[in-house]
Length: 133
Image (cartoon, rainbow, N blue to C red):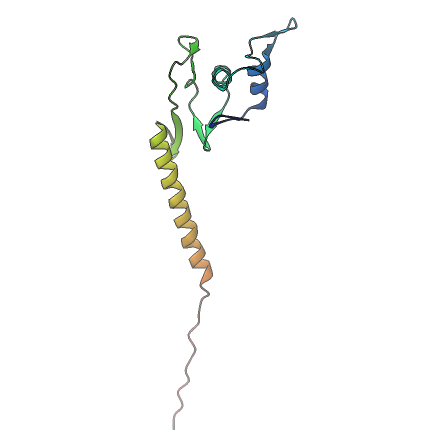
């Protein structure tokens, strides 16, 4: 589900963020309702630990909901979790965009190089027979 520039990935958590979490005794707790703003939905979805992505990049949990203060972050600035050499690194949006762009460019160059290798058929040298007269 798209919410502004963000993609909410987990359908169950989207439903719980909107309608509330079912209780064992019946009824539901929480939920922002169907008329909630995008910001309210992002905060509640983040509080539930739902995966948020922007342009395919993973947004760190807690960017919209402050788990320590137990309230919405006043001026959310998303932090992205990017994998670099098998390590998860937290970066700003500008850094994440630059890293993703560099990664895509590197992958394109690799596939282009592989394509060139495959495109060239191997040529065998023709044997030239010398005739003796």
